[in-house]
Length: 430
Image 1 (spheres, rainbow, N blue to C red):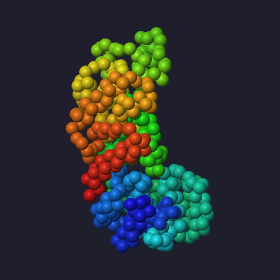
Image 2: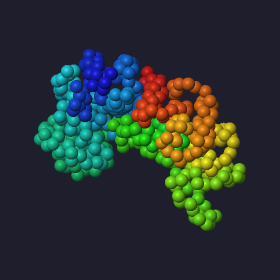
Image 3: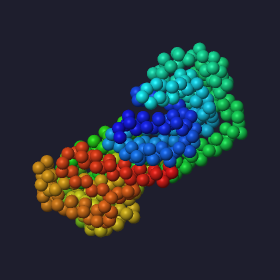
Image 4: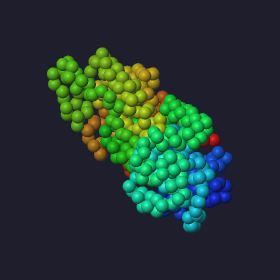
């Protein structure tokens, strides 16, 4: 089902079952209502029936977010319950729905009034100390003389005009808004703090994806296609790392700075240039990288994925297992696998992207056939350890053979991620 068909089904259902109004981004339609809790099972089933997946689910004190995706596209739905800051209510559900009008089309859609569209954005921005965006100047001009708008601003913030509100400190305005209903706002503030702490400690609404494979397997192209597919929603909410979080510099650079190494080989275009290292040197390298993975997870990864960000790795710890020449860590594969299980934070999706030696050599001749076969053998080792044929939940290995087009490989990866995320979010939503 296309995105347009899904939206038509979606709003037909809302028109029949809910009091709602679309707050923003209604232009081009053929994320707000007070009956959400009664309808979430039906909405989830509607998404499933349409062949789409809920890949991200986030709940806070004032809104719930679904990101739904399929091969047809990706959309973000935000379900607002009120307009509030730190739990202090600025506009209630009833006020947000007041004066909503119908946008005619193949399927009628209820949208908020111009007055409420302005107030929602203006009150929130001023409460957090931000200026009302210049790009919405026409919206402000249309309602600036509206007595109802001025009355709401005066009632919430105690300022006589929009011009006075523009110049008043957010702290003073929030205090006035809080004192309008101190006991109720205090309760909502506690609820806000509960959800903020819970999401900080427990949430993993974003997810992590790592790609490993021999040079010539097409990783760079496939990664770009995956990121491009997710970019309509996550364009500014994802990061790409190479091999590790990189809290610390390259080992050779650190050793040189410490006076332990006289020269640094900076020919990074040849990642297999280094000679074979002994057991002690390999183990010290492993400890160095593991420290970066552990600390970097909490500093550079978890801080993002806890609130809907995506973090990609072009190579991850799996590269240490699969390509010992690149990392110069020559230790038994069983030891490396067990070490990673014990000490290295696991990614949600470990993509093992590969192809036959003939296919890879036809693209690039950076590796010998023996090198490619050795890496592929280790990829198969990881898949044997995984012991599953179908990924139904995050945390497992995914082998993708990229011998046709990069888009087909990217679609296969997205299909696996979407299905596993959907299964995880089903438990959260229902």
